[in-house]
Image 1 (cartoon, rainbow, N blue to C red):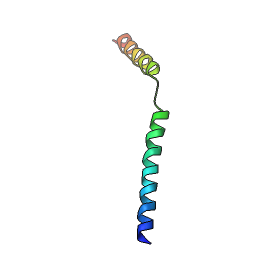
Image 2: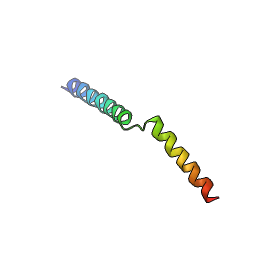
Image 3: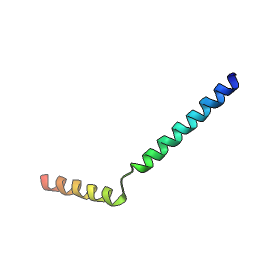
Length: 49
């Protein structure tokens, strides 16, 4: 009985890790958005000085 619980918990742990990785990849910003936000930040910083 305990072997079944250990295997079940291991499977749940692996699924949770995979779900975490996949969700981070899906929510990742595109490179274009990152570059635009960085350029906008630098422009605002230069305008304030």
